[in-house]
Amino acid sequence: MTKTLAVFLDLTPEQAHAQWRRILRREWPGPGKRQEAFLPVEVILSYALFFVMDPHRIGPSNVGMAPDVLHKLSRVFKRSVRSIPNKMLNLDFTRKHSGKMEPELYSALAAEPDRFAHLYHVVISTARDVGLDDSEVSDFLPWLQSGYAHLLFGQDELGSAEVGLILREGSEDIAILQDQLGLAEPETVRVVEQRARMGQHRFARQVLDNYDLTCGFCGFSPKHLEGHRLLFASHIKPWKDSNNKERLDPANGVAACPVHDSAFDTGLLTVNGGLHIHLAGKLQESMHEDARADHYFGDGSLAATLIVPPGGLPPDRRYLDYHRRHIFERRASPGGTA
Image (tube, rainbow, N blue to C red; front, side, top):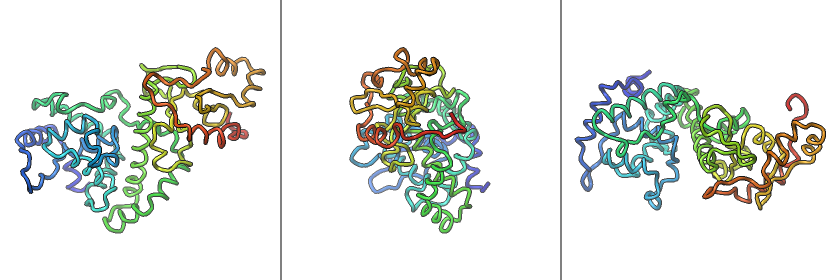
């Protein structure tokens, strides 16, 4: 580990206390004055923000609509709201003029999620110690305290084929990270892959929240059992067939329990533009032969129309049409896997 990275990765509570006190003494920079360099506690929280917001979607025209946590941190840090997303873009190497340290740190934190969870806890707890309460510095990743620090939501869709596509799409960035910044191949690959995984995490979180942690096909709602893989956020138009905008669009997702998620993903179920659920002929035949299949897909279990909670965003018809044309009754598992 380089000395520069150690400043961040080996941050102690004593160091974090000192940095928060320095931030509290900070004044807003006057006209024409450059902002102070980000301190490690600020950088760690900037990385943490990837779990809840997409910095690429925060621009001059919509900065007022940015998540409240970003505005809170901007006030505490005494920085412009845009400066924090800009730091995030340096970290994930979306801005190609970032230094070596930022993507290197991004890669290191991605490689050691438990270490990141520890650092996040240090930063939040020391903020409380110096008098910054939740109205000023929110604990916006409370699930890190629940034993699931190593998990990103929605990663089940990213198999080896999808990861291969991620790396091919990011090959130019990988080359720049290696040739111009001198990062090793594992670090560069991790930066590009983690960018996609973070996007998938945010997509899944948005979809699950949109459906109020409830299966859209049967109404099963394991709200008190998060982290036990009882509910998935599935793309309607598959991830590998979507462009980057479609991959991140929550209107291209549906929340489903494991049985109905698999059935939808493999074309045994589909949803039309009026949100009516349809069963493939193969599934209907199975239900006549197997009472247990009827138990999962019959009228007593499967809803007639997709369950979208009040105020929830229904799926975009474009994605439903794609699923019906290209997935429904066309995908099958020929042997080996049921």
